Length: 286
Image (cartoon, rainbow, N blue to C red):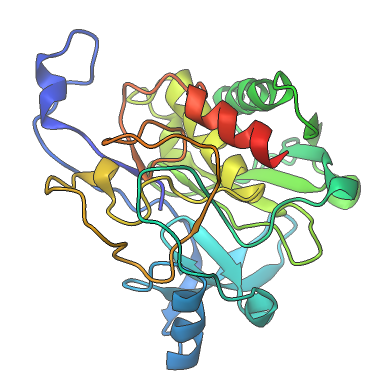
């Protein structure tokens, strides 16, 4: 889940959004009435290492007007019809390391064509602020010396696009899925309209876009097992709170408190840039 967390200590920091509250804002704008998942669907998500506490089934509206039924857990969206194409994960370590999903982007699909949705005059069009944030996020990926390469265009012809980034009505955050069993990147990335508010800087929007692209190429939340970034204050658990665990990326560092663009929650002080741990993880995978 990619949520906004307003930290109490921000009120005493210069330049930080002044607030002494904690606030989680739902970040997946969806269409229609929510359905309830079946026990078998929840069992499958559990075996995939996806949090099953607040899963819904939603008809998500795509920018071409069509709808696809998804299982939704925070900002993770899995197509209902493709659920059984995802294998179960093997239980891993519960440290604050970098984690990936079961599939990553296959070598033949690593030249990724991203379409920023514009030009229709509809609510799906990315605003100028979102377009700039998308360009910055793509540049962050392209500067790294690995085999991923992104080509960004803007418009509304998605026939040649591997990934489509569009706006939906909602609070702060976004949503995305994981790479497919065929090794293709997740196709649809949704950025919530609430990020266009003056509350959120261009760097914060860059952070959210980069985070959702990260999911789309196979990254899990770095703090998936305890949601430290969302306000968890206890000592780190000895074992993951979700089992089986996401897949640890060997070679990525451990730290008592995670620091990554792939944390589950963000705040208004984000700079939108990769941390050294993010760079290490991306270059190891790709």
